[in-house]
Structure formats: C-alpha cells, structure tokens
Length: 249
Image (cartoon, rainbow, N blue to C red; front, side, top):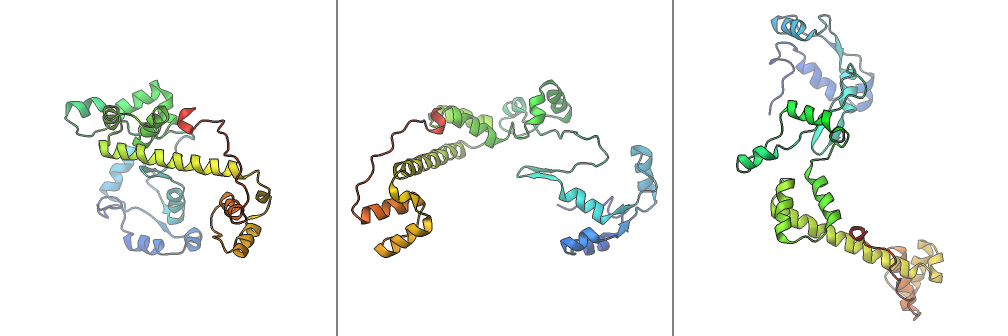
C-alpha cells in the first residue's frame, strides 16, 4: 500500500521535510515550529471550490502530530477526530451485511454507509457500543449463555461471528480452561487463607521455605501450603464452595 500527501505531490511537495520531522524525538516533535502550505494549483483550487477549504491554509507538523497521536485505536481500526467537527460526533462502526453474505455464498461485506447510518439513528446502542458486531463480543456473549455448546450450535455461532468453526471451538475450549484454572486457584486460596501462616508476608514465607529447603516460588497460598506440608501440619478442610463459576450465575 502506498500513501500520498495529496495527489502524488501535486498539492504538497514537502515529503523530505515531513520525513525529517518524523525522525525527531518526541520532545522535539512537540517543540517543532515547522509549517507547510499547499501548492496553489488546479488540484488545490478544486478542493477550495468543492469543499470550502481555506485558500490561505497553512498547517504545522506539530499540530497534525498531536491530532494523530490522540486518535482512538483498537485492533480493528483507527479513528482520527477532526478538531473542527462538533464535539461528541460518533464514528460509525462497520456492520456485517449478513443477508448479502448468505446470498453470495460466504463472501464477506459490510453494510453501505447509508444503511449503517440509518441503523445507528434507529438503534442508538449501535453507536455507543463500538464492539457490538465484532467476533470477540459475539463469542463472549454466547459463552456467558452456554460455555460448552454442542457442535451444531458451534456451527451456528461460527456463522454469526464470521469465523471458522475450528476457531470458535478453540475459543470455547480456551475460555473454559482459563476459568477452570482460575476457579481451582481461588479454591486453593480460600482453603489456606485462614491458616495462621497466611498472616505472614510473602518475604517471611519465602525465608521459611528456604530454611526448610523447599520450593519458594508461587503465590502466597502455595507457599503456606508448602510450609505446612513440610512441617507436617494438618491441611485445612477444603473450602466449601458457596458461589458459582462465572458462567453458572
């Protein structure tokens, strides 16, 4: 992909100056007073006539750099706010065109700008929930409903999230593993936190482990368990679960 400032330098011819600015340190970029102006030619005049661009426009690299640096970024795109636009202006997120996707045998497209704008006006939540139609949001929603769906349901989720069914299956398996691991760790912590050794700091527990010649790595509950076992102390009763796993609530 190639990007040009204007129409292949017909409007701006400061390519070398711009590259020099970008090589400056962050501090010097903010202190730089270099400016640039467009070439007053037919291309620029057409912009003035069509878009009411200021014919006496003069920009500065530092001001442009600040605007770009404050852009809203995520893994799906970058949104640069125009300082001259009304405050609170919303950026329209792309919405999948599911009907076209089905009719064209899986070819991916988004709705046109006009349809997206119409839906945004009709359903304001679309405008305020920037990730509403992203695959991750869709998968998270279904996982909260059912963390271990059968294969036929996984296939339907794959269609709605625009992902291969293998990716969806791996997502659910990974999320379940993470939650199960977190659940076990929480149970371990709750089991040992009432032990008298738990009142000690991690540093003090590590010194005890060193003195007993036992492993001194791990979270606090693991250190307490290791010391208690090494000293032949009785293990507390397993913590009684009084709450549900995240997907069971």
